[in-house]
Image 1 (tube, rainbow, N blue to C red):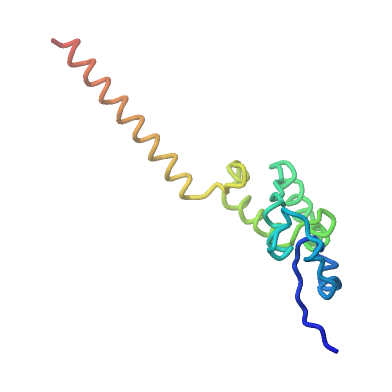
Image 2 (cartoon, rainbow, N blue to C red):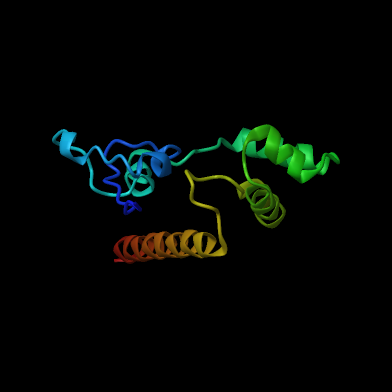
Length: 137
């Protein structure tokens, strides 16, 4: 007899999910268990890893020193794509690379920074013009 593969995903962990699919604990489920698949429920509870600027610079330096990118990725438990992205950011933005909390320094950020500076300087000029007019009269 073939049993349908139905799983409640309420208390099965991600690795054992396929094994427990046939023995669904739905009738014994406690209040508060999610009916979402484990992968979705786990994504809600897991936080993104954040790496410090120093860590990123260390990893990029190891690759630049001649170590294979794949080996460095395995040692630090990150993907080679992540290392490639960090290297690209460092080449492109130099001292501004890795400056924010997860927010990459980009040309748009630089444009916004310059626009704020223009606005501030315009306000200062207007204030100085008004002060000069008052002094002249």
